Length: 302
Ligand code: NCD
Image (cartoon, rainbow, N blue to C red; front, side, top):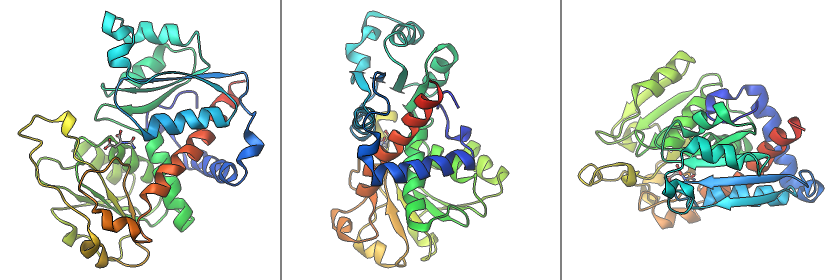
């Protein structure tokens, strides 16, 4: 694999290798401190980010590579002066051995990958995909269950605009006997494209209007934020499906709660103290998984 633009590019074999390396990096980070020394990685972010950008930047530096970064490229890069994305990519590829990019257009990373001489990593594209998030989501589930087969997961909230769910259901579709409960309010349902993807790959998709429709022994509750920045004001006035302690109490001991974060009010803060709430651990895993990915991409290419 040269570029990472969609989670559908990954095979089970890739994930096995990546999770093994992420586990090793998590246990023995100091062994890898010079792995990418002499290399430069660029982070080019046209949309806001805390976790994704900082975990990539920490990953880059923990592997001994150097970093060049523009965190608010929509406002401060030459995009303001009218430069096209392809011209920007042609310039940045001359300065770095890889480009990690987040963009407001769904296909921007894919378009960049068609012209870039260095690996492009999609760190979130509009309301389309966020493949490196699904790597850390799957890794976090894998750490709990040691397998992604026979998984049942409820994806909750804004399934229409939430790119993390799009990439996650595609990646989970690689595995056997997948059941996805889509819990969303009217207008925010998962689009047919992703439902087909799950079903074509042998999984089941069950649509629900509330968490009451999800069996109490589900393996994962994957909560998400309403992506108001991608909606009109009227559209954004939707209610939230909230997980509080009372809601969580109905689920079994093995049911874990994940969220790509940032959260608004869709997970009550009281839930943070429940041992099943793994979203902070999940966010931290982002760094190990992104280290593993950068290591694999940049070692393979040199
Ligand atoms: C997500 C994103 O940017 O899509 N955040 C993240 O990368 N962890 C989710 C979100 O913004 O709601």
